[in-house]
Length: 440
Image (cartoon, rainbow, N blue to C red; front, side, top):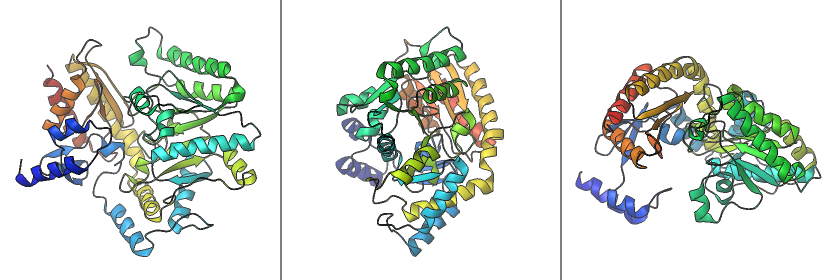
């Protein structure tokens, strides 16, 4: 470790409070100083090169160092670095991006935010306002799922079902309840995947009946749960959930902060998974993480009520529709289209990576399951009796080998940039293999 690096780590510990971090533990270990990115790789201050198997934080979909995204930000900064969307104003990038997002999603309107957490806060505001305008203000309860992640603000953390977040914040806030997640591996059930999914839909149906359909406003879920451990539901799960929501006139919200913008080989996961939400949360991949941007896609039913009968919607953010962020978003959509990256994910990267993951799992007894959808994958390690630190050990071994993998308990997660090549997938698997061998 160089003297300069050590000084930087000390300064970081002295002044920087990191998200989701044990501050005392981090101060002892010291941070990893990431200084550069190119393609699917990041580079530490020491020169250590790592294949970024997590796309930053699920968001650098088009990889690092894309000139068109960098130039889009620079050009917009030189033209109009900021103006707000309040007071009957708009900017060209926000107009064009809203239109393009509507086209690729099939949902007619867009409300821009800073990121995913405040977008899910916005979902609550939109849903409650919609039912007020429908003359049904008593429809206030939103149903989420255990172990789901929808953000870390008070409202979005409440929508999520992660107990450690709830215990630190006196959460959830009122009118939010949770049902079981579609975690087939974790359920250890004798049911078929299809029967398991239907039982979860039946559980939601019963919960709505107990709460009273006249009191339930919406159901929210990630098409594939990300931070919860890449929980891929059985194929019939989402159509069954949608059927329950329609039967009880409950709005359906798809949180596509992670799954949107090509992660599953389509613009949005709902387009692959066979259901149609009323509202969609987006962020992360809309700009490939080059600049913060999030928002809500609003379908016709909700949008028409808000625009025709709503009067003023008393909600918004200084940076709603930020012109630089929207310009980068536009450039990102163009880059995705020009490179045909959705087909690359769907037809090349996903089947190739799935085959190699299965082969790797067959080599290591420590791997209990390997699963993948699009470019979201997970390796389940060990048994219920395995040490709880197994995943952390594996993560550290992977880092030393030059691969970023995320540990969620003893589940190892990968979500590489969508532009990853077959040779880079080979490298990812080779380095993961090294980490798994280190656990033996």
